[in-house]
Length: 358
Image (tube, rainbow, N blue to C red):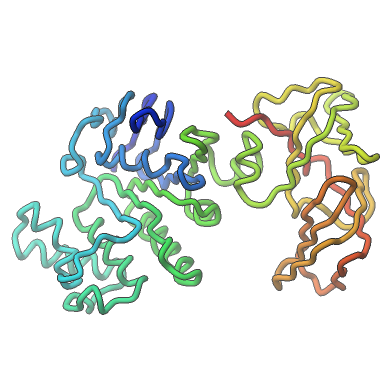
């Protein structure tokens, strides 16, 4: 399996920037995900890795080989498209075998490889069926089998689960990760679904407006977001703005207005945060970090909305000029109602100081 390197890659579409100055090193055997909202440049970058687009500037390497202008058929990649791109007039076997036939493999070799990969994706016995006779999840597995049967160095997946219902998405997500671990194949995945990215990836690159915002493990991206965009896009976060009132060693006191002040640790921060008295700073507080009751960072407010999901209880609380999401694990306790008062405290390590978006 091969590593992938993007070295100062730009892509222009006329005068419009697709992506700007992408620098990435994807390790051999890694499950690496491009995550971001629609139009952020993640699919454009994937298509440059595949060879469907050539960069306007910069270089792309597979291991030490410069593949920047190499055609897709010479890159030994497997690709699973968002709409699967299956041939409806062909059977399952014929769809999976197509790449091997193009490569002029013998009939015996094709039969053996296709049968093996059908078993791998749990489609053995489906070879004679037409694509139109399959469910969405089965079609997705055919597309995956077709990409894997050619034994690619790199597997590329462009939002492959977006057409599936919620339960099937979860099942197929587990299946893709199982296959990737079993085969040890370098896998590059594109999605706008943060839960998908967090559950499947070894590392994630978060993109916005054609730029890389942060690269890291799911834990790093969630617990230590680089800036306000990452904090708000990954999971749920309360983004609050305040003014730095005091700095005592590592303790920073921030005034949120209307008598609300919070204490945080200045070491718990993203890059490029300036700790200066009188400066405005953004805070990220995850809803699950708050604990009901009094404490050193206690805040009180009025419950405005209640969401009960079985496992979790979520409140929208008005605290001064701010509205804050608070989340508790359901332990069978009484659930507050709209209009009731609630007091929560926030541990100092639950406050994260944010840098600015790039």
